[in-house]
Image (cartoon, rainbow, N blue to C red; front, top):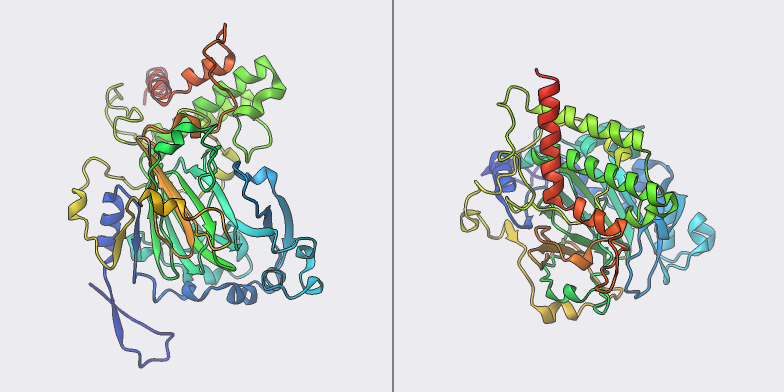
Amino acid sequence: MTTVASGDGGGGEGELNKPFTPEEAKEIIMSLQQPAVFCNMVFDWPAQHWNAKCLSKLLCRKQIRFRIGMKKPDTAPQFETMCSYIDATLEEFLAWSCGQGVNSCGPFSHYDNSKFWAYADYKYLVNVFEDNTDVLQNVMWSDFGFPGRDGRESTLWIGSLGANTPCHLDSYGCNLVFQVQGRIPYEESSVFSKVNVINPDLKQFPQFVKAERHMVTLYPGQVLFVPRHWWHYVESIDPITVSINSWIELEEDHQARIEEAITRTLVCAMKAAEDPTNSKAWLNPTEVEGTSHEINCQYLNGAISAYLEHNKGAETLKLTEFKINGDHGMEAPLKKRKLDIHTRTKEKKSPCHKLAMNTAEPQEKIPFGLNLIPVLPSLQDESSERGITESDVNDLVKESGGHLGKLNCTKEQLVMNKAEIPLEDSIVSDSTTCPSQPFISTDDLLDCLVNPKVISIVAQLLLQKRTCNFPE
């Protein structure tokens, strides 16, 4: 047990024990194969007081960008490109969310808060507090076994009731989500689903009925662990929500970057050759246009170089040693991986951590209890009660082997599902298979070429070719 002083420095509050030492917390994170919620680990973090009012004072009327979406029960998700955007202060956001009148709401005055939600999502703290970098130390991921990791490697999420991120999975790393106020979402990913998991269109996506949800309502002071490649949907269910997250780099990320580069190069080249205006069908909803072949090749070479540099000194790579997606329970979706080379270049180089998916201790040896709550599948009738109402929580959708998982977090709901054998019709795709189709289309060919197992083999062959041509 780790003993720490509690309180704000005024003294007299005694000492409290954290349930896990940093070493124990990290070992748990690297062993967990399912989402889980850490409790009583952040009570001494100064950032625990970062509610929206506190942040508005710290930011001194600095404007940040909000995404504006509509509160509507559509079966289709509201992707980022379908939303409006405004620049506003947190004071204006607070006035708007509390219904204080249009005169004090600034840019929000054009939106009725009974019909719209606002979301300042995926804001890097290092940019938000560029004029006050000392406060970045108020986020202390070192308590979870990652020394030196603080607000510099974290992002901020501030949302109003109903603010949400569509169902997606993150290609890189695992995720730690610290809930500060209310119940709020987090997002940014590489693969999006076309299914609105809260209001699915089962006629269009019939296999989604097989999904098994894990839902969690995350409360202030709790930290949610989201494993690598778990589908998740998040929704803010309180009038104002604030959360902070950090993506922990993993060994598998080096391979994932190569595979994504290959996928993007193939998709952009083939779709551009067929019809340059038709590439959007294969882009993520958050992307405006495809990148050029030259840029994609540069990214591919950079990813291969980074992989070889990371593995310098290792024996010559063998095809059987390269992790083929799916062999280790890490299979990625069959379609549409996003290579966000613009945002990824902003990442700081941090030590990668090995996620022991196979060597981890059996789940029953993980110290689950009051301070580490596992996110378990929920009953089907429980998920059907929810609907898309203003009292909803953030959902994480865990999609593994045709199962959709459900978590219970701060007042935002997360719906999760591990991406092992993803539901074919839940992945972003505008191509459909028609039994009567008399010919093989470009989309049909791409569906086969970007199969994760095929891409993994191609990546290995490229690495071997690079090693042979440019021996160390």
